[in-house]
Image 1: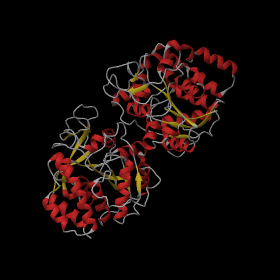
Image 2: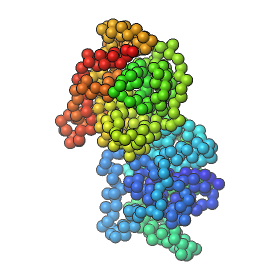
Image 3: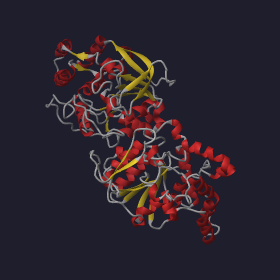
Image 4: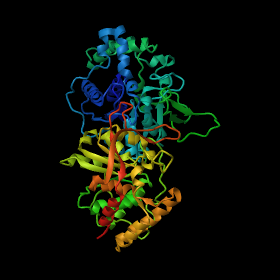
Length: 613
């Protein structure tokens, strides 16, 4: 018996897949997870599944609601294409369309508590090598689970993905299939993951060459003949003729494709389909027409490509370290937790650095939660300013004896926000992977964020990576876009101001007067940090993260101006660039305040005062 988790977006074929998996003696359905997709918002998707299982007499099966939006998505008008598609059919089918993806009535039971991503992670990790994940909607939940728990690639038995197309035309654009297109960044994460997987494309589902696998009116009549007074068969006979007619007339198919039920069947009987040899399949992210296209690497090409075969939030480096010291020592701040992400170094190193720093300064009771090991949708590009360990220059700093909490940073931060009696300030000094993933997973906590102070972006001056891009934005621009689109109040503390607070000779002289072990440690950090800064940029070390933290203590240190901020996700030279529309030329509402002037003298006085005993 195959143990599966079924991840669906509750379109018509998903309903049939849920019924098939729930009733099949070859399947033990561990649970159903839901994702926003073709059937509409997550509430509709989840209610459809709950009602379907009640109809089948399987209210014992847990149902967990999942992602409420894609990682990046597409243009709003394009994302609403299924809705517009229905409107185009009104003239032909009239009132019959009321049976096509109708609003779900309130279910008799609620969804099971807990996010879909947590259910996937906990179930798979508790049963290594036993669980098959079958996805029949956009891949957002699966991607989020892999981002949050990289060990899933080893613990999963296999992964079956309904999506993509190769010879058969796409069903959302001529080149792209809906599930991949709806969240191509998530699709690339999943398809690039090193896990045993089977990709089930439109070629074996939505093509008249496989007409025998499609649902027709004759099939419904046959079911009614052998299963009289059966609630499930009666529902299919009542609801699915309109699906059959739409797919016959609009898509020129013999019947209604059983894509999702076929994918479930392949989980326990892969011999149902003829498989290719193992291939690497990638996803096109750019362009409106080709976005979401699946590309199989086969044969021999001149250009190299390919990959695995398939059937405080901070990144503690030197300036983050000083910001942690300031946060702990300031009486104006109650430091309730530290979360870590990749950036200056791999997340295991940044976590170790955070623990070392906090224990050394007597803040070992501050909980530390390790976060994302990679950006949301791109390979990790490490920073270089802080050396291989992310915190070079102080070899005498002992390794920590304390450990991080046993909770991912995304959930740790969400729990802290929920528990807070009033909205709280979040200071982020690294790439925004943790914050972006938290928004995707825990949108209910967003009103509890008083403001997000983020060290990142550049607008007026030369940047540190490739003009006009700043590293934290460059490292995970998709996460930055999610944050900018979230409605959370944001203060962006970019290079425009952080490059005005440089450690030069006068600052070293002041630091020399702090004759304490901590003063020596900070001095050694800065000497290493300055070498790389001066060699690459011709100036002393910039206090990027300490300035962002200082604004939680004294927001009057900078002058700001509001603007609508966008981020370039595809440019050859401007990838990751933050673009400010100060004059509302695009008609978009302001979504951030930008710091553009800083009182450097007052900042350094604040910093040095906090470093003194």
